[in-house]
Image 1 (cartoon, rainbow, N blue to C red):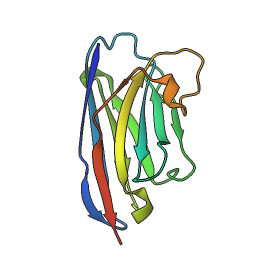
Image 2 (tube, helix red, strand yellow):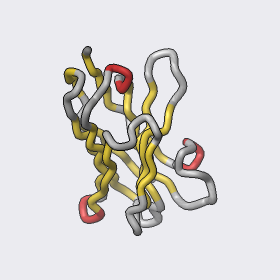
Image 3 (cartoon, one colour):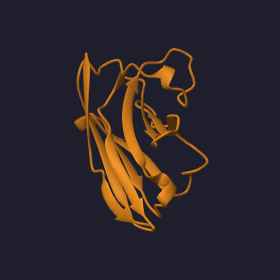
Image 4 (cartoon, rainbow, N blue to C red):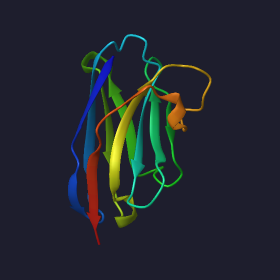
Length: 125
């Protein structure tokens, strides 16, 4: 079992920044990647960003590329999502996820085995 605890969400004005954190504990030794997804009310869950644990390769949704940065601290088993130049359309519940390699694109929720509880991000205009 793996537990994920997210933090860092909140209310920010458009153009502002937030940094989300996701700390993993438990059986994390087989981690291949960690990712961030988001879901706004009435909308489907969307991929935001992902990072492979060993090499640190990153992947971003087009909508956040150039504004968001995903990073990881292997010693702390923590992944971060630095969000800059936030827009009202970035408002959503953000979920982190952890998964193992199985040939599924990291942009798909199916690539991940465990999920955090979510943290709310609200961007006011």
